[in-house]
Length: 364
Ligand code: GDD
Ligand code: MN
Picture 1 (cartoon, rainbow, N blue to C red):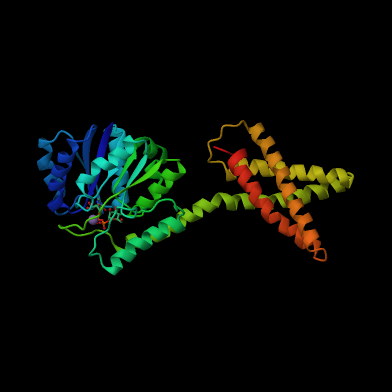
Picture 2 (cartoon, rainbow, N blue to C red; picture 1 turned 120 degrees about the horizontal axis):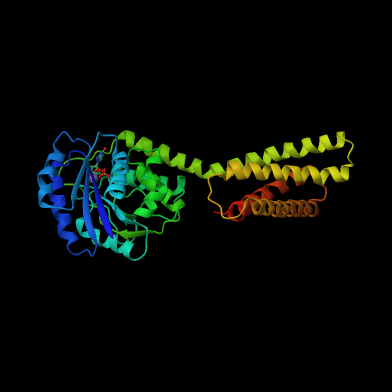
């Protein structure tokens, strides 16, 4: 494999050359074609010049420069360059300040060799570590960041969602197309991970010890923390959006059902025939709305008429669930209001309906 270690830098003159040398040292033990790509944002301290001075000594050292738009923006440019220009099969994310130990690089790459697509150098799995001397505030900042990512953004299964030390297969990056991500700062890390999970990447956490930088200072600012929290909520919203759309389609279906029922009666049709016809009309409109709106982004295998049939089957199952609930409540609460029982039946029916349509009818 050709693997490109991406090092974003902003004012890392004191670190970058030492970092490049330490990485080259590690590369000798790694059975892959290893490269380094420094992504510098015209650091005023002359980081890029230090890299240029070093470049003639190493064929596998690359540099791109640009204007500072944030850590995420730098990674987006770096990944694009690594995959499109350098033809990388995998990329690594890594800090240039020695917070991530060069000695840990081979272990992360072994994760790829063992079949994972997205390997995280994790501080929060057994064996992983944050510095002992981190202040209470710094610990909380990191803990809360991960709590947000895990429980607000919904990545429960990952312990260290914010880690900036990772090895990722190029196929996953290409599927995600990082340029479509809206975040430009540190929040990029959780957005990328979230998209990888949506794209069925095999995620694996390898314990690492995070060490404090000895030279230079952190670039993480208040605006990064704000963007991070807003982004976690945005991810949650995006996740529930499909369900909300599905619910909206359901509500439209109720109107379609009643309107066509009324129309058929006005045309003089017998009500016992008009009722199932109106139900079917609403099922068909709901199908098209879900097909071309709710689930439109999915890449589905079935032909549209098969999906239409499945949707009808699911509607029938939902009807059975709704009716069983109604019957059950009528038995349990014989003196209750029938309208209430009927309305309660809609709740489990909606979830069954959504679940079956999402994982069967409109399966990817
Ligand atoms: N090109 C570029 N542009 N590089 C940047 C920028 C930017 O806007 N901002 C930061 N960097 C570089 C730094 O020079 C450093 O090499 C690396 O990105 C990480 O920046 P630090 O400022 O050292 O970040 P940190 O130590 O606070 O944050 C680390 O932990 C976070 C939380 O776990 C990083 O690993 C983050 O990726 C991680 O999210
Ligand atoms: Mn750092």
